[in-house]
Image (tube, rainbow, N blue to C red; front, side, top):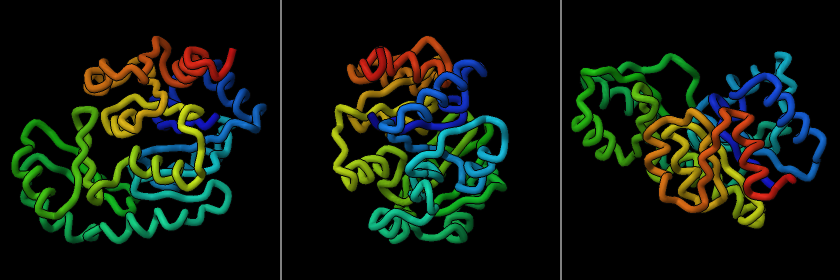
Length: 236
């Protein structure tokens, strides 16, 4: 099987025992392909391997909410997907310049590639934000009632994953995707077997409640992934 999973609140969530059980299972079964699909930048993801989490090493990193795709071993861009994303990006400075006058929008001070991330507060002018992003020919994702991501048009976690799956020619019925917030919605729209882990964002639950391929787990984080692997028959 191939497991494509969000990190914070999903693969990194759950109890310590649940995380250990999931990571041990993946490390033990070398036939499981692992893909990290995250809003973090690469350096933030790599910092996770310096601790005592015993994280399995994925074969692919999809970072920056889908705007970066790298080989898990070499950290080199995966082509031609990377170049197609790069070609659509108008540039960070242009985005910041156009959005500087949108009320309630605060730039995030984190490393970012081919995306711009912000916090927003109760003063956010959503209409002005949406119109400006549209004029930039970019896409907008708002999640967790505080995060805004501006991405190249058509670029998101789900679309980048689908391009990678096509590149691999991997069987669709052997794929499981996992997430917990609204910026994971595009993963659930791929049509692959999916799990919204326990304590997922209300917006994600609402948007996926009528999708038959989506399982809503009771357990949080890693526990929810294990629960879904059993539900879909990937493990007994």
